[in-house]
Image (tube, rainbow, N blue to C red; front, side, top):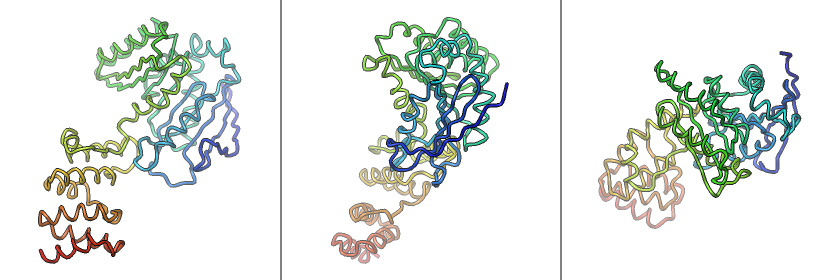
Length: 375
Protein backbone atom coordinates (compact mmCIF):
# COMPACT_ATOMS: atom_id res chain seq x y z
CA UNK A 1 0.00 0.00 0.00
CA UNK A 2 1.38 3.35 -0.95
CA UNK A 3 2.44 5.64 1.85
CA UNK A 4 -0.10 8.18 2.92
CA UNK A 5 0.43 11.89 2.40
CA UNK A 6 0.66 14.02 5.51
CA UNK A 7 -1.04 17.39 5.40
CA UNK A 8 -0.66 19.43 8.57
CA UNK A 9 -3.13 22.21 9.09
CA UNK A 10 -2.59 25.34 11.20
CA UNK A 11 -4.23 25.53 14.61
CA UNK A 12 -7.97 26.06 14.34
CA UNK A 13 -9.83 27.98 17.00
CA UNK A 14 -13.47 26.98 17.09
CA UNK A 15 -16.18 29.20 18.50
CA UNK A 16 -17.38 26.06 20.24
CA UNK A 17 -14.15 26.03 22.29
CA UNK A 18 -13.61 29.55 23.62
CA UNK A 19 -11.38 28.63 26.55
CA UNK A 20 -8.36 27.59 24.49
CA UNK A 21 -7.25 26.85 20.96
CA UNK A 22 -8.04 23.40 19.65
CA UNK A 23 -5.25 21.69 17.74
CA UNK A 24 -6.79 19.82 14.83
CA UNK A 25 -4.39 18.27 12.34
CA UNK A 26 -5.67 17.01 9.00
CA UNK A 27 -3.95 14.04 7.39
CA UNK A 28 -4.78 12.33 4.09
CA UNK A 29 -4.66 8.56 3.69
CA UNK A 30 -5.46 6.09 0.92
CA UNK A 31 -9.05 5.33 -0.14
CA UNK A 32 -9.76 9.09 -0.35
CA UNK A 33 -9.92 9.17 3.44
CA UNK A 34 -8.94 12.26 5.40
CA UNK A 35 -8.51 12.15 9.15
CA UNK A 36 -8.93 15.13 11.46
CA UNK A 37 -7.10 14.60 14.75
CA UNK A 38 -7.82 16.64 17.86
CA UNK A 39 -5.65 16.42 20.92
CA UNK A 40 -6.10 18.26 24.22
CA UNK A 41 -4.11 21.48 24.07
CA UNK A 42 -0.45 20.37 24.13
CA UNK A 43 0.68 23.77 25.41
CA UNK A 44 -1.14 23.23 28.71
CA UNK A 45 -0.29 21.05 31.67
CA UNK A 46 -2.75 18.16 31.95
CA UNK A 47 -3.61 15.83 34.80
CA UNK A 48 -3.39 12.90 32.38
CA UNK A 49 -0.10 11.58 31.03
CA UNK A 50 -1.78 9.73 28.15
CA UNK A 51 -5.22 9.99 26.59
CA UNK A 52 -7.87 7.52 25.41
CA UNK A 53 -8.58 7.80 21.69
CA UNK A 54 -12.03 7.98 20.10
CA UNK A 55 -12.18 7.03 16.41
CA UNK A 56 -15.32 8.24 14.60
CA UNK A 57 -16.61 7.21 11.16
CA UNK A 58 -18.02 10.24 9.27
CA UNK A 59 -16.11 12.30 11.79
CA UNK A 60 -16.51 15.50 9.81
CA UNK A 61 -20.05 15.69 11.22
CA UNK A 62 -19.34 14.62 14.79
CA UNK A 63 -15.87 15.84 15.79
CA UNK A 64 -17.12 18.90 17.67
CA UNK A 65 -19.67 16.84 19.62
CA UNK A 66 -16.83 14.66 20.91
CA UNK A 67 -14.59 17.63 21.68
CA UNK A 68 -17.39 19.60 23.33
CA UNK A 69 -18.35 16.68 25.59
CA UNK A 70 -14.95 16.44 27.24
CA UNK A 71 -14.39 20.19 27.37
CA UNK A 72 -17.75 20.78 29.06
CA UNK A 73 -17.19 18.08 31.68
CA UNK A 74 -13.48 18.40 32.35
CA UNK A 75 -13.54 21.18 34.90
CA UNK A 76 -14.30 21.50 38.62
CA UNK A 77 -15.40 17.96 39.55
CA UNK A 78 -14.20 16.32 36.34
CA UNK A 79 -16.71 13.86 34.90
CA UNK A 80 -14.87 12.95 31.71
CA UNK A 81 -11.27 12.22 30.91
CA UNK A 82 -9.66 14.27 28.22
CA UNK A 83 -9.29 12.21 25.05
CA UNK A 84 -7.92 12.36 21.54
CA UNK A 85 -10.51 12.44 18.75
CA UNK A 86 -9.72 10.82 15.40
CA UNK A 87 -12.43 11.90 12.98
CA UNK A 88 -12.36 9.65 9.91
CA UNK A 89 -13.63 12.10 7.31
CA UNK A 90 -15.59 10.54 4.44
CA UNK A 91 -16.64 13.73 2.64
CA UNK A 92 -14.40 12.98 -0.37
CA UNK A 93 -16.15 9.65 -0.83
CA UNK A 94 -19.61 11.16 -0.31
CA UNK A 95 -21.94 10.90 2.68
CA UNK A 96 -24.57 8.94 0.77
CA UNK A 97 -22.40 7.43 -1.93
CA UNK A 98 -22.36 3.81 -3.00
CA UNK A 99 -18.62 3.75 -2.25
CA UNK A 100 -19.19 4.72 1.39
CA UNK A 101 -21.77 1.93 1.77
CA UNK A 102 -19.35 -0.55 0.17
CA UNK A 103 -16.49 0.38 2.51
CA UNK A 104 -18.78 -0.02 5.50
CA UNK A 105 -20.22 -3.32 4.25
CA UNK A 106 -18.91 -5.77 1.61
CA UNK A 107 -15.55 -3.97 1.24
CA UNK A 108 -15.07 -3.32 4.94
CA UNK A 109 -11.77 -5.22 4.95
CA UNK A 110 -10.22 -2.38 2.93
CA UNK A 111 -11.14 0.29 5.48
CA UNK A 112 -10.30 -1.99 8.40
CA UNK A 113 -6.82 -2.56 6.96
CA UNK A 114 -6.34 1.19 6.57
CA UNK A 115 -7.38 1.82 10.17
CA UNK A 116 -5.23 -0.97 11.58
CA UNK A 117 -2.09 -0.54 9.48
CA UNK A 118 -1.97 3.20 8.82
CA UNK A 119 -4.31 5.35 10.91
CA UNK A 120 -3.88 3.76 14.36
CA UNK A 121 -0.07 3.46 14.07
CA UNK A 122 0.16 7.08 12.95
CA UNK A 123 -1.90 8.29 15.90
CA UNK A 124 0.02 6.14 18.38
CA UNK A 125 3.35 7.43 17.06
CA UNK A 126 2.55 11.15 16.89
CA UNK A 127 0.16 11.73 19.83
CA UNK A 128 0.16 10.87 23.57
CA UNK A 129 -2.37 8.06 23.10
CA UNK A 130 -2.99 5.39 25.72
CA UNK A 131 -3.93 1.85 24.73
CA UNK A 132 -7.62 2.60 25.41
CA UNK A 133 -9.37 2.96 22.05
CA UNK A 134 -13.05 3.62 21.33
CA UNK A 135 -14.89 3.39 18.02
CA UNK A 136 -18.08 5.30 17.20
CA UNK A 137 -20.32 5.64 14.19
CA UNK A 138 -23.83 6.10 12.92
CA UNK A 139 -26.02 4.19 10.53
CA UNK A 140 -23.91 1.79 8.33
CA UNK A 141 -20.94 2.30 10.65
CA UNK A 142 -22.70 -0.05 13.10
CA UNK A 143 -22.36 -3.11 10.90
CA UNK A 144 -18.80 -2.02 10.13
CA UNK A 145 -18.14 -1.89 13.88
CA UNK A 146 -19.11 -5.56 14.15
CA UNK A 147 -16.68 -6.46 11.36
CA UNK A 148 -14.00 -4.47 13.15
CA UNK A 149 -14.75 -6.25 16.41
CA UNK A 150 -14.75 -9.76 14.97
CA UNK A 151 -11.75 -9.44 12.62
CA UNK A 152 -9.54 -7.24 14.83
CA UNK A 153 -10.72 -7.96 18.39
CA UNK A 154 -7.58 -6.49 20.00
CA UNK A 155 -7.79 -3.11 18.26
CA UNK A 156 -10.67 -1.41 20.15
CA UNK A 157 -12.05 -1.72 23.67
CA UNK A 158 -15.47 -0.13 23.18
CA UNK A 159 -17.89 0.42 20.33
CA UNK A 160 -20.64 3.04 20.21
CA UNK A 161 -23.07 2.97 17.32
CA UNK A 162 -26.63 3.97 16.50
CA UNK A 163 -29.49 3.50 14.02
CA UNK A 164 -27.69 0.74 12.14
CA UNK A 165 -29.71 -1.11 9.46
CA UNK A 166 -26.88 -3.48 8.51
CA UNK A 167 -26.48 -5.80 11.52
CA UNK A 168 -26.87 -8.83 9.30
CA UNK A 169 -27.40 -12.38 10.52
CA UNK A 170 -23.90 -13.24 9.33
CA UNK A 171 -22.34 -10.38 11.27
CA UNK A 172 -24.25 -11.26 14.41
CA UNK A 173 -23.22 -14.90 14.04
CA UNK A 174 -19.58 -13.82 13.79
CA UNK A 175 -19.93 -11.84 17.02
CA UNK A 176 -21.42 -14.85 18.79
CA UNK A 177 -18.66 -17.12 17.51
CA UNK A 178 -16.01 -14.68 18.68
CA UNK A 179 -17.26 -14.70 22.25
CA UNK A 180 -17.99 -18.43 22.27
CA UNK A 181 -14.43 -19.12 21.14
CA UNK A 182 -13.01 -16.75 23.74
CA UNK A 183 -15.04 -18.42 26.44
CA UNK A 184 -13.90 -21.87 25.39
CA UNK A 185 -10.26 -20.80 25.53
CA UNK A 186 -10.85 -18.91 28.78
CA UNK A 187 -9.79 -15.59 27.24
CA UNK A 188 -11.29 -12.39 28.58
CA UNK A 189 -12.16 -9.99 25.77
CA UNK A 190 -13.97 -7.50 28.01
CA UNK A 191 -15.65 -5.56 25.19
CA UNK A 192 -18.27 -2.85 25.62
CA UNK A 193 -21.02 -1.93 23.20
CA UNK A 194 -23.23 1.13 23.55
CA UNK A 195 -26.27 0.98 21.25
CA UNK A 196 -28.74 3.79 20.59
CA UNK A 197 -31.95 3.42 18.61
CA UNK A 198 -35.19 5.31 18.16
CA UNK A 199 -38.16 3.11 18.98
CA UNK A 200 -39.66 3.79 15.54
CA UNK A 201 -36.57 2.31 13.81
CA UNK A 202 -38.15 -1.13 13.48
CA UNK A 203 -35.66 -2.27 10.85
CA UNK A 204 -32.85 -2.38 13.42
CA UNK A 205 -34.54 -3.60 16.60
CA UNK A 206 -34.00 -7.32 15.96
CA UNK A 207 -30.25 -6.94 15.46
CA UNK A 208 -29.83 -4.69 18.47
CA UNK A 209 -31.89 -7.07 20.62
CA UNK A 210 -29.60 -9.93 19.57
CA UNK A 211 -26.50 -8.04 20.72
CA UNK A 212 -28.15 -7.41 24.07
CA UNK A 213 -28.93 -11.13 24.38
CA UNK A 214 -25.29 -11.98 23.69
CA UNK A 215 -24.24 -9.87 26.66
CA UNK A 216 -26.42 -12.11 28.85
CA UNK A 217 -24.91 -15.25 27.28
CA UNK A 218 -21.31 -14.04 27.71
CA UNK A 219 -21.36 -11.66 30.69
CA UNK A 220 -17.63 -11.96 31.39
CA UNK A 221 -16.79 -11.13 27.77
CA UNK A 222 -19.30 -8.51 26.69
CA UNK A 223 -21.14 -5.63 28.31
CA UNK A 224 -23.94 -3.98 26.34
CA UNK A 225 -25.90 -0.84 27.15
CA UNK A 226 -28.88 -0.64 24.82
CA UNK A 227 -30.89 2.58 24.72
CA UNK A 228 -34.15 2.17 22.80
CA UNK A 229 -36.15 5.36 23.19
CA UNK A 230 -39.10 7.18 21.65
CA UNK A 231 -37.21 10.38 22.47
CA UNK A 232 -34.62 9.47 19.83
CA UNK A 233 -34.97 9.46 16.06
CA UNK A 234 -32.77 8.24 13.23
CA UNK A 235 -31.16 11.67 13.06
CA UNK A 236 -30.77 12.39 16.79
CA UNK A 237 -29.25 9.10 17.94
CA UNK A 238 -25.69 10.31 17.17
CA UNK A 239 -26.03 13.00 19.83
CA UNK A 240 -26.83 10.27 22.36
CA UNK A 241 -23.61 8.45 21.46
CA UNK A 242 -21.53 11.51 22.31
CA UNK A 243 -23.32 12.21 25.59
CA UNK A 244 -24.87 9.17 27.28
CA UNK A 245 -22.68 6.74 25.36
CA UNK A 246 -19.42 8.35 26.39
CA UNK A 247 -20.69 8.74 29.96
CA UNK A 248 -21.35 4.99 30.08
CA UNK A 249 -17.95 4.03 28.69
CA UNK A 250 -16.20 6.44 31.07
CA UNK A 251 -18.37 5.55 34.07
CA UNK A 252 -15.29 4.54 36.08
CA UNK A 253 -13.62 7.93 35.62
CA UNK A 254 -15.64 10.65 37.45
CA UNK A 255 -14.42 11.70 40.87
CA UNK A 256 -16.87 10.21 43.36
CA UNK A 257 -19.50 12.40 44.98
CA UNK A 258 -21.64 11.03 47.81
CA UNK A 259 -24.95 12.52 48.88
CA UNK A 260 -25.33 10.90 52.30
CA UNK A 261 -23.47 8.57 54.63
CA UNK A 262 -25.52 5.56 53.52
CA UNK A 263 -24.12 5.95 49.99
CA UNK A 264 -20.59 5.89 51.40
CA UNK A 265 -21.20 2.65 53.30
CA UNK A 266 -23.07 1.07 50.36
CA UNK A 267 -20.10 1.82 48.11
CA UNK A 268 -17.77 0.04 50.53
CA UNK A 269 -16.46 2.89 52.65
CA UNK A 270 -12.93 4.23 52.68
CA UNK A 271 -11.21 1.05 51.35
CA UNK A 272 -13.49 0.92 48.28
CA UNK A 273 -12.97 4.61 47.56
CA UNK A 274 -9.21 4.16 47.74
CA UNK A 275 -9.41 1.16 45.41
CA UNK A 276 -11.60 3.07 42.93
CA UNK A 277 -9.07 5.85 42.56
CA UNK A 278 -6.18 3.37 42.28
CA UNK A 279 -7.86 1.61 39.36
CA UNK A 280 -8.91 4.94 37.84
CA UNK A 281 -5.32 6.14 37.96
CA UNK A 282 -4.03 3.05 36.21
CA UNK A 283 -6.73 2.98 33.51
CA UNK A 284 -6.66 6.67 32.64
CA UNK A 285 -3.01 7.55 33.39
CA UNK A 286 -3.97 10.04 36.10
CA UNK A 287 -3.04 10.39 39.76
CA UNK A 288 -4.40 7.70 42.08
CA UNK A 289 -4.81 10.27 44.86
CA UNK A 290 -8.40 10.55 46.04
CA UNK A 291 -9.81 13.86 44.87
CA UNK A 292 -10.25 16.63 47.41
CA UNK A 293 -13.92 16.99 46.51
CA UNK A 294 -14.54 13.29 47.19
CA UNK A 295 -12.83 13.48 50.59
CA UNK A 296 -14.73 16.65 51.41
CA UNK A 297 -18.17 15.19 50.69
CA UNK A 298 -17.33 12.05 52.66
CA UNK A 299 -16.09 14.06 55.64
CA UNK A 300 -19.10 16.37 55.52
CA UNK A 301 -21.50 13.42 55.71
CA UNK A 302 -19.45 11.85 58.51
CA UNK A 303 -19.84 15.04 60.53
CA UNK A 304 -23.56 15.28 59.73
CA UNK A 305 -23.96 11.73 61.03
CA UNK A 306 -21.67 12.43 64.02
CA UNK A 307 -19.49 9.50 62.90
CA UNK A 308 -16.01 10.17 64.30
CA UNK A 309 -14.70 6.77 63.26
CA UNK A 310 -15.46 7.41 59.60
CA UNK A 311 -14.03 10.93 59.74
CA UNK A 312 -10.76 9.71 61.25
CA UNK A 313 -10.53 6.89 58.69
CA UNK A 314 -10.93 9.41 55.87
CA UNK A 315 -8.12 11.61 57.16
CA UNK A 316 -5.89 8.66 58.06
CA UNK A 317 -6.25 6.59 54.88
CA UNK A 318 -7.08 9.19 52.22
CA UNK A 319 -4.95 12.08 53.55
CA UNK A 320 -6.14 15.05 55.55
CA UNK A 321 -8.63 17.53 54.18
CA UNK A 322 -7.04 20.66 52.77
CA UNK A 323 -8.09 23.31 55.29
CA UNK A 324 -6.45 25.97 53.13
CA UNK A 325 -9.51 25.70 50.90
CA UNK A 326 -12.05 26.08 53.72
CA UNK A 327 -14.20 29.21 53.82
CA UNK A 328 -15.25 30.28 57.33
CA UNK A 329 -18.46 28.23 57.43
CA UNK A 330 -16.75 24.92 56.66
CA UNK A 331 -13.85 25.71 58.97
CA UNK A 332 -16.30 26.20 61.82
CA UNK A 333 -18.31 23.13 60.76
CA UNK A 334 -15.37 20.71 60.96
CA UNK A 335 -13.52 22.31 63.88
CA UNK A 336 -16.66 22.37 66.04
CA UNK A 337 -17.18 18.65 65.36
CA UNK A 338 -13.57 17.85 66.28
CA UNK A 339 -13.74 19.86 69.49
CA UNK A 340 -16.89 17.99 70.45
CA UNK A 341 -14.93 14.73 70.18
CA UNK A 342 -11.77 16.04 71.89
CA UNK A 343 -9.70 15.99 68.69
CA UNK A 344 -7.99 19.18 69.81
CA UNK A 345 -4.86 19.13 67.67
CA UNK A 346 -6.73 18.68 64.40
CA UNK A 347 -9.33 21.28 65.43
CA UNK A 348 -6.55 23.76 66.15
CA UNK A 349 -4.97 23.19 62.72
CA UNK A 350 -8.23 24.03 60.99
CA UNK A 351 -9.06 27.02 63.18
CA UNK A 352 -5.61 28.57 62.78
CA UNK A 353 -5.66 28.06 59.03
CA UNK A 354 -9.06 29.64 58.51
CA UNK A 355 -8.46 32.48 61.00
CA UNK A 356 -5.23 33.39 59.23
CA UNK A 357 -7.32 34.20 56.16
CA UNK A 358 -10.51 35.39 57.90
CA UNK A 359 -9.39 36.91 61.23
CA UNK A 360 -12.59 38.88 61.91
CA UNK A 361 -15.15 36.03 61.89
CA UNK A 362 -16.84 36.07 65.36
CA UNK A 363 -17.82 32.39 65.30
CA UNK A 364 -14.24 31.32 64.64
CA UNK A 365 -12.87 33.64 67.30
CA UNK A 366 -15.30 32.17 69.82
CA UNK A 367 -14.43 28.62 68.74
CA UNK A 368 -10.76 29.41 69.21
CA UNK A 369 -11.47 30.52 72.77
CA UNK A 370 -13.29 27.25 73.43
CA UNK A 371 -10.31 25.35 72.06
CA UNK A 372 -7.89 27.00 74.49
CA UNK A 373 -10.27 26.43 77.38
CA UNK A 374 -10.30 22.69 76.63
CA UNK A 375 -6.50 22.39 76.27
